[in-house]
Amino acid sequence: MFAKLNLFKECQEYNLGLWECPSFIFMVLGLVNIVAMLGTYFIANRYTDQPEIVALIVIGVSAFIFILSHSVTQGFDKLAQANKMKTEFVSIASHQLRTPLAGIRWTLNLLNDGRMNNPADTATCLGLVKENTERMIKLVNDLLDVSRIEMGKMTFMPRQTNLYVLAQKIINGSLRFAQANNIELKLEASETLPNVFTDPDKITMVIQNLIDNAIKYTKGKGEVKTTMEATDGLVKVAIKDTGVGIPRSQQKHIFQKFFRSDNIMKHQTVGTGLGLFIARSVIEESKGKIWFESEEGKGTTFYLTLPAYK
Ligand code: ADP
Image 1 (cartoon, helix red, strand yellow):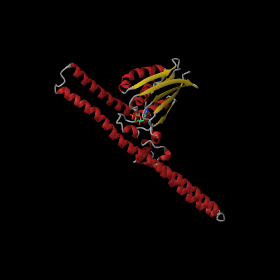
Image 2: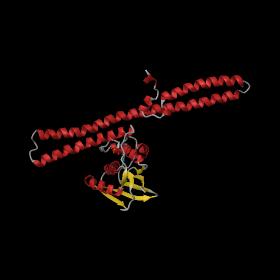
Image 3: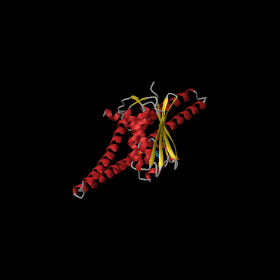
Image 4: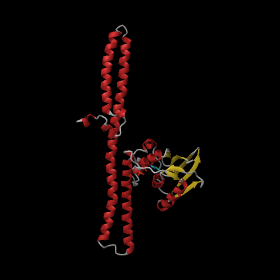
């Protein structure tokens, strides 16, 4: 009974701010209406010889109601958009789980039928099963990270971290993936780069995602260059690719969760649209910034800055 009276519970659940929460705004509108009617009545009674004051009050109240109605519409828009994205996401996530699962079933059938008799073929099959399993684990981990971020429960264990050392490890680990895609990986940074204070596992995930994207979204031969420098008490990282770029009209959505641009959807590259949403949360949690510059058909550069550790 009392739970039903909690007007804001739903809005908290849907992540809507107070001034976008339809039930709250409707309540305010009701109160404003009552106060405005009573106020106008009393003032009109007292200042009957000054009708312009009454007119001003009516105009003021109408403007206020107009602004509030606009907020209500925005709240509904946001809910509708979230709903659409969730529906799209269920379809993307199911599709992406189905692809590796189908791969695993196919490989297991081969092994089960006894058609893969020699050890080399068996090893190839097991390699495929492992690769597909890792794809699924990544998707599920991304989903768990997103839900932790949204519930404000992401665990963050910051300590002094050297981004140069970290980037070297990431790049070494990505060499095979880059070679398979005909991409040359470069790293330029001073070895005396100051440390930053952040969670090394989380920042590894961010830089790995940016480098993976730079490789994934470059079609044909290309180059991905990571540079790091210290400027004004900050460590600045830039990851520049010569890839497909991001269409200008879609750039404003790039950090929204589940968003994937039209131009890369055509290439059927694997992805969920969660990496950059997670990246931005991690960087902001470390008091840093992340942004990008991109031109379709020419390439993209992602930048991030983190405060240098003193
Ligand atoms: P995912 O790569 O799994 O789709 P991300 O959140 O990492 O998810 O990226 C979101 C979207 O941003 C990508 O789908 C792609 O449209 C765009 N994007 C990210 N990085 C690049 C890049 N380096 N070049 C072109 N587009 C990119």
